[in-house]
Image (tube, rainbow, N blue to C red):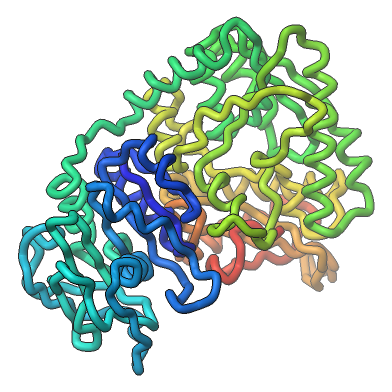
Amino acid sequence: MVLIIDFGSQYNQLIARRVREHHVYCQIEPPYIDVARIKSLRPEGIILSGGPASIYEKGSPRVDKEIFGLGIPVLGICYGMQFMVDALGGRVIRTEKREYGFAQLKIKLASGIFAGISEETRCWMSHGDTIGVLPKGFKTTASTLNTKIAAAENTSMRLYGLQFHPEVVHTPEGKKMMENFLFGICNCIKSWTMKSFARDAVAKIRSQVGSSKVILGLSGGVDSSVVAILLHRAIGRQLQCVFVDNGVLREGEAQKVRDVFRKHFQINLRFTRAKKLFLSRLKGVEDPEKKRKIIGRTFIEVFEREARRIKNVKFLAQGTLYPDVIESRSAFGGPSAVIKSHHNVGGLPKKMRLSLVEPLKHLFKDEVRLLGKELGLSDEQVWRQPFPGPGLAVRIIGEVTEKRLSILRKADVILMDEIRAANLYRKLWQSFTVLLPIKSVGIMGDQRTYENILSIRAVTSEDAMTADWARLPHDLLGRISNRIINEVRGVNRVVYDISSKPPSTIEWE
């Protein structure tokens, strides 16, 4: 197990993913974690992440410097290295020239972190401060043209620092450097697999739940589906799944869930139709955050009603993932800006008085997919693209109505047909249609039309933290546009969204 201290880096989750790619478990914790807690976790290594702060700023993040005397190997990355140097008596200085982007790294000591690394290699820099003087016992192990001390180590204390970012793809040999730290320095063992996770998770669920019943809101998405199968394997008929048809689902989605989980997996499934209730509350609402909150509150209301009808329920299961947990707390324990409400974290009403079961809360999305395969889910279920909790309501810009839902559903079916036919479905993180709140003039059958505009959104991503618009072939876009305009009554113009995240979000609302 490796502990990652989060100093606010935009790459902190990427560090974790790189560690887990080597089949080593890791956990991200805030800098205010105390030493006693660190000792109880018994990590083989500690990684201090980068961060946007300067070590000299008031309130800059700091972890107890006692960690450097625990005998546990510590790797400081960028700000993490600067904190290490400052805490141990070295000196960090402002640079005249900020170093950002690619740099040529010259290795001075080809051992430890740099064992098997080319004598000269590219790396990715992102810093304004730099190391002026190293603490006693440290020596420089690499440098760049602008950064004399680009890497350093104190092997007797098992401390290592990198001023650049080994976790990003822009550092080509960064993966090897991480491997050297994990196995050559920390002596980690490759024990983190989804087979071992499933075995441990089943045992933990049984221990936590005992003979009580667990209720799960099953949406049919990857996360809730994997939770359902994992819980069913652990406690069988003690699991009661509830599917709420909220009226803003895609074409045929409700029936698919019933067929897969009730018929194939033979899981207890309570099916609730609440379409009229949801749509009545969404009437006239255009603000996206209001739509999300209305759907969230209404879901909880319907879910609570169903939960009261089931006896001996003491636990609520959720498909919370690690990015949800991390994003829902700020790096330094303070308030975070709300970009959009998460539908899992913090969504449990206190009056339900149910304890949470969150077996996936330390997994990333790609790991959940691997777990799903391990548990026997089909490729179609495992590789299902993410679908927002509020459903099509946030893919209709403006008011949600039956007519607008019908238009969007029909267009969505066409898009999915063409994306799958082009063998691109699994290569895209998400692909969907968005109905815009404006109309445009067109000509159909020699007559003037004034109809809806629909946007296609397709992105590539590893974990939804960042995303790039997909360069779909022009012929494919042409076929999709042609089919939608010809087959979906009410649409006379199709556009393609070519914005990336950031600055845009993946979903429009």
